[in-house]
Length: 482
Image (cartoon, rainbow, N blue to C red; front, side, top):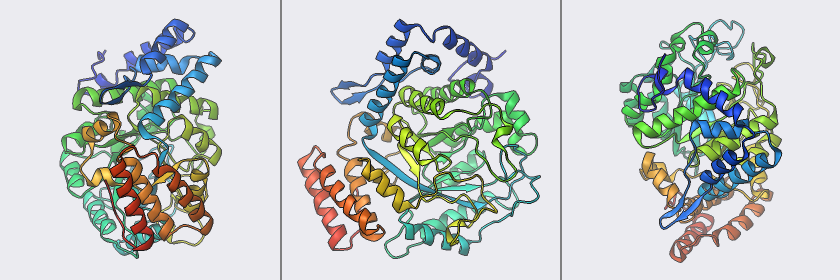
């Protein structure tokens, strides 16, 4: 039996099976313990301090009690608190990105993914560097500035050298006013040396989904291939940190195992990163199992209702207040709209989950990783966000100014969002409006920017932002940042 130790570098100790089971039992026993629930909610509430706003966050046990709670008025309090915390640290900015699939060659046998090695009828594709350039131009023509790079695990077809060359290509493309300013990377667990190479190549966040924290289920769901090694996969974020990547993104694939187990494991992983490196996950993603080629989500009996999914999002936001939270186009417009209020701060838009999909006129399905539920264009997503009062942000300033890891978290915690991230978001939105937006979107967006610029607290920052936005509109200047 492995004792729970968040400071350990061993997966079985910082994700302790016994501790998770005890946590689930504790949560079930206390799910209607009103004094305890009230004390947990009070602990999580944002507190104003001299240096800004502070949130204590929650332990995995405290957060699990909230997740288990089924008292309607307490659940409603959770939702209001989640929204309050999200607004305190991220305001009404929603960061926009798109996935870019480089290759779907994969040697693993993951039973929930259509890229699994035994799927003989999916079309296998790997982009050449010229094809990557074409994809990047297509993405730039939509207005994207931030990508999430995806590739299957295949040491022959997708070695680290291919990923590094692809990153160099992505960053090199300049088309009209387009530029990819940040490429996050979601590839298989690798070595410290390879993470160091990714860092040197200028990646943003390294993202790796755990899929499931339940070791027995993990081994059954990954029967063959290098991903079968639970410890190596689970300890990947530690190697990434040791390789110099201080922005890492966690996530589980909800629906593979009991949600209570996955939630507790996810919270413990965040605690581990904080305990060892002094900074928690930069992002947490919340994908659900969805239909795809050769994959039937009904084959997994741990699926989540929309209501339960929303509750998980709210509880993550309360427990890990400073993390960015991501929801993809796996989810419908209706689900994403509710999720935005409960804590999500980043969404994909105009996504295609097939290799080479952005250069195709019609959405291709022969190499998709999953069905896309929200099939709106980027312009439609941007307009939708603005109509709800949100600011679509294409900002990448923090990464390029070196504000990563604990430096970003310090900025977030000391309340400088309105003086830094807010004007940056408005300036990148102005770029989108000037270069890519439809007439309706332009009209809505310019009015939104005029309203939102007044919220910048510092007079000097507000005036500089106004000047820069005028130069974007009238002098064709780009890439201003605070």
